[in-house]
Length: 395
Image (tube, rainbow, N blue to C red; front, side, top):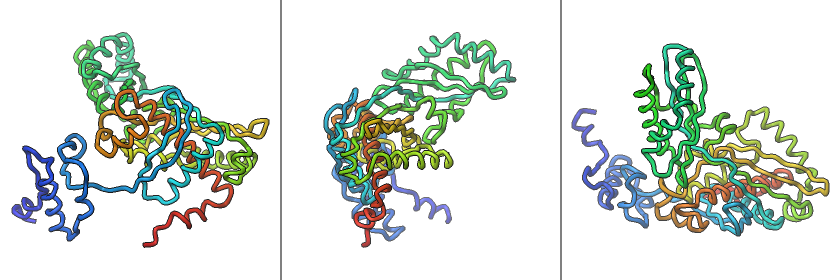
């Protein structure tokens, strides 16, 4: 490709005002000329492109994902209380039907209890010193000067609060984990800006000077890690319920003793596989909720991690809980304010300030509902037949 061809192949942009219907149309025409695709469905959207700065670049249209609704999901939580109808955006047949069945089961058993037990968002810089001794001394100095470091970090944000700084020693390096509370925002960008200010303060004020890298990778942003399962990233939220033996037998055709037997088998399998979640399929429900409600879907890599814990009770009922250890959600900022995403958050009563913990509890209860339904389907033998009936698009 020569220089003239390369220039002609550049995606059209308007430096002064790129978020217009006209510029979106220019880009669709540009793509159509070069690919032969019509983009007639991509071109159909119901909002003004002027709402999109900060969410997308080179806007040309929309990807429309079918959306269903499941519920009512009955929750008795600290923040989520009542019956909720849950929007789920997915292209997987049987998913909404399965979650709907699990929600019905939970409702018939009195609903789910939910609790947000801890919440942090991290940025994890690494300071590189001349040797391990100097790195250790820097770590002590950081502990002694936490109040000043906290003040420097919080000059960049109104809602972010630096709660503590974890430390890990490797050779001449001091890996730090700055742990923040971030209100109703997910907080990745917020904590990055705050930590940069803190690291600059450390670098300028530490007597010997200190070289650093803003991300030393122990925060494992948008990647699953054991450290975040143990120490929490985003929100650590629990959903739990007591499943009545006669109710699950009636709805799903399974016995709680068989359910507990299956739990022992799957627990061993999850251990062998080194799974990030020993439950059934947290990523399915969370992804459908994330797409519908304007969450950063890449955070599913971390958010689906969880621990299922169950007990077969003396009366034959079944205690079932799921702990999501690193659920990253927001009800303010990012994609949450876009038109359809805002409508879905409003369906749940979660849009805006004060909604993040409520939304987290709804996410956890949705996962619990989905896990009960899929586990019951596998145990009862109707998992494959359900997909045959509802899950195949043969067009």
